[in-house]
Length: 264
Image (cartoon, rainbow, N blue to C red; front, side, top):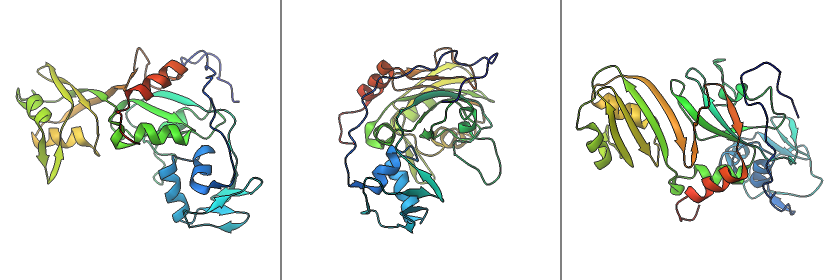
């Protein structure tokens, strides 16, 4: 495992979680194998397969029903992958200006690059924050965890603090909680509370693409700063920008407990 460079104002210790590892039995569906290797969530791994980026024993596989046998050689983009022994669950305070993607054709800085010097495992983000937003984002190499946490039916709360360039209309919070339609898309938050004339707290459970920004744009209110301070039971809790911490077993159990009792 890569070690933390000394003298940096980052988490002093990287905790070792005692999360039970899933049973490994073969034959295994290829997308599940990719997820358990930390390539991506199971759903995202399906896209890797259908895009022709995955080979088994030298043969490109594009069928989702493909099975992997013990001892098979599996490659993604020509790079051999294997099941990772250690599962990682990381909470990062992402600064604005970093994108939530493992790579970027425009060479913009990625949130994942902030973790790369400290972990040897392949970590990917669970959900997203747009480039201009800051705050909490989860990273993992556990595809099953990612699938459960990110599935829309889980309805895990995500809490944001928004600072605006103009005074916020007094009815914005109430209207957002009742539901607002913008350009044919319906947006509704779980909760909203005006904190000052230019500061508001918003809690989402679904989080459509750029939801908060589009609602505020419909009121012709510019956003100066948008920060996510909570994901389920995991809070920012003094974590500074670019800092991270590895979730404890209690943290992970708390996130699972936050999931609505739907099938995910």
